[in-house]
Image (cartoon, rainbow, N blue to C red; front, side, top):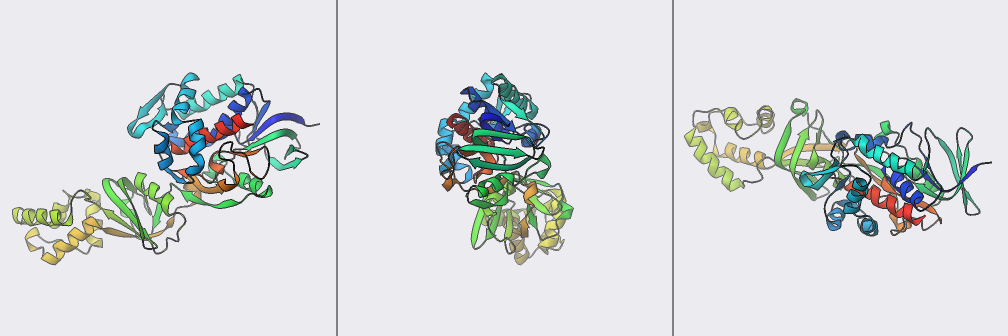
Length: 406
């Protein structure tokens, strides 16, 4: 005989834990099945181990930061807002702080404290937890779900909440299992793609590995469209990363990038005309100065050699720079092109773009429109957002809806 539950949650990440808490709060006998050896394994590494658990801003701002299917999240965010998230954790005894960009972190800067808070709430409300649980099959017979595990254990229940996450970060146990369940029950799954991940380039930028740029504008031209972001970026040995590159990756991840071009505006605050006026003055004033030495005042020192080599600017004295070379210098400072190869592997993306088609999910309950009492929450859904706490808020809000709805 298998043990019977009102609700079984498959997945013990952010969305799974919070949905189990609200399910159990309503007196539902609730079980969480997690195939890892502990809960919240991906949550543990979010925000570089600090856990940026939400963004202390308006619902409208959150919707504006969702890349795919923001409209679907309208009901969820109104039911469990960023402010609700903050109150939820603070009422549970977790001290929080808000940093630049309205990013909310635990005051301790430890993501483990977020997991401990959720685990304690689960225990307080009587949620049962089965770790190291490898599920073999999920079936539905006569309105009852039957879940069979590899170790021959079988569970039955009235409702199932799928909170298996995406496929990014396989080291945390990420797998396509949630998509497989969705397809089994007739759901359409949007092909997963990397999001918030490095942009791999064709050019040899290995000498710039680790170099960070601030207050620059990065643009990607693909299919005659240009996507641009201003802020901070970082070079690796073969890719562009950092906040603005990661953000752009989520906007271009459905394109063939083999012919795409990345362009960096090193001086977005200055027009070409202002740069030209500046160079005319400076080249007269510092006429005996070498071009490379002069560029050290405009660009990071590590970038200068690469910049002059790629732009084919000879290292002359400033007084020897021709009008044509000055034009080349200005154009390269305003639009420094690097050929794009592709996005990095989905395994290194912070989140997964794609997943269960939300057209087949009730936005007010997160229940399947095809299968009664089958729910999908969190990253397994085709909803993803930019960095800043927005993706975890999607997990909290959808998990809340499902937990309340069961």
